[in-house]
Length: 447
Length: 167
Image (cartoon, rainbow over all chains, first blue to last red; front, side, top):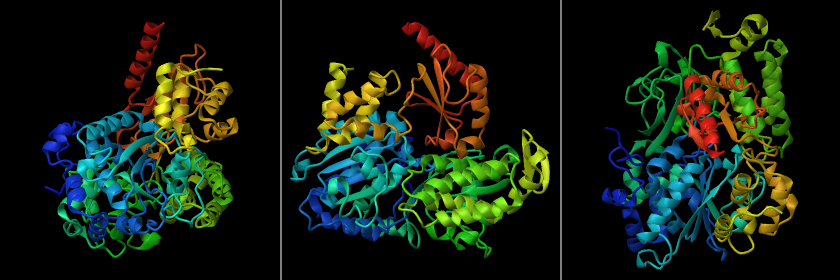
């Protein structure tokens, strides 16, 4: 049985009820931290654990915490990023719905470590039903004395508030999120200064993903050292993977980092293989922004080694032959899916979601969308492939926030690995635009 | 000027109280959600936005800026039920385009349009965060997942039924 830290017990009892949660050892980390540990002591354990940000960037959480400006006499804030909107990613929604108290517990011990007395959870507006679940959990935690003033007679005060967004992918970028939380458009800020110094309302602020914070109670209870023993190398702990696309068992799985990709795709414990007996064509392993990999590079690296579900192994080979673990949004494509159409779809997404501040992103995403639309609908020319390559290169690295990179990478990877498919669309416009046309190898099939 | 019910107004004041003094603008996005539902009939007419500005003691332009940025706010009148269907990659891998075609065909409208009886608006959305359970659509932020043509037909029928009961 693989180790379960985040989803343990969720199938045994209704953990939305605090009594059920307490019965399985819930909120122990709050008593332990507040009664026996200093805030710095908690931070030390998180550093030792090797926990890395679960929102997509994979930056070490403890290190991020250590950047918080402690000399400032302004209030400090913990802001939780629950704006989950990277296509393919739906893990935080699952965690907050089925284990809301673990999440709240993580917010409490993390806020304590940071010396924050107010914590805001910025949740995407489309998850409105979760707000009720979380606010109920917060009210229950207040009743039991885990929140509010003088928590467990420790002299520590904390309030947690849930703040809905209103539909904007960009607000998952931490400085856009802070702007949005201040009641403004979600335009990312220029860094530095980083939020750890100038964050919410100009105060020192840490922004962390839901899953990262929900991992902290286990680390407090068992020690950072024990957490760092789970997983492989610098990929420590467990990770939620949300699997979708053409698989038999889509859903959210908690894996120990280090599981083989092949096992994750084909084992009945996880994805259960490709749906309808078809073959695997490609996979986007970490949310729509990370490079797509063809079947031959997803289960094995270019060197022929088994590809593992770790930050390092998924990135093995760089962007030439690798990808990224990202947010854990694992999107699987069967052999009848069209890479050109999917790339056009993703690019339309980034164009729609670009905040419009930086011209390379604002103009480039729209331009790529148009060119891809032309190719997909039979009006492309061979020059268009080079044009796309050129545009994506000019977006990457030239924008305030990483949305530009996120829009560029999927286009680059699709051309890198599936150039023949773009060429086929361009040289066979009539076949390519036929309804139900499926390009399989060099053959046209009708699905 | 439109006005929130007493109940919503006290909720709004509670929301404002979550933010530090002088930072009441932070309440803008949550309050606009309530305004769209309770005062705008599913969208945000200018007078509703002006009322929210007045409530939060900010300039109307600050509200317009935000209302025009976020996709959940509607800036044109909408039908009684807004069908918000996800059109992003993972949903399309499992047939979202087919479901959208079916809705358009059944209701006789294209995306962005409202039926002549004012009952339904079809709106396409970017990723709703339900990729493993697609195709998916939302009506008033309620998820309807693993959609098939039959499920969509039943959903449309139940909306019509609900409307008839409320009339």
